[in-house]
Length: 141
Image 1 (spheres, one colour):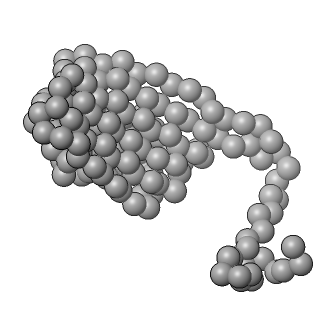
Image 2 (image 1 turned 120 degrees about the horizontal axis):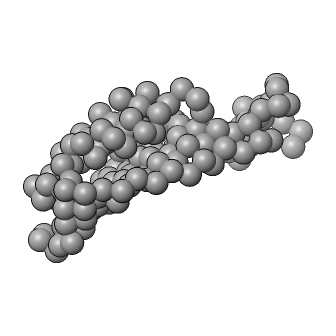
């Protein structure tokens, strides 16, 4: 590349990543849930879901970068909320006509807890039934 880290090149900032510890590993924790028969007023309320994701990120010790949301249709439709956090992401997708929602919380690193975020979201959606899955996405380098 021939440029110093951070030097601009045609409007693009190049940055060099230096790993100091050769025994480094990428820690990935992925919790996901299927939510059945949640409170219909909650899964159709875009603002409620946005706030829910923000609070879940705080409870899980995640650092919020940005939240985006979209509402699709009326009675037949749903809401999608996606939060970008420095640790990865939180997503909620709802299907109002099926009384169903999915939750996806993925974190990198040891300091954040995707279980806390997922449990907080489930508790506040008030489902009659739910299932939770977990994938360990840790990789040794």
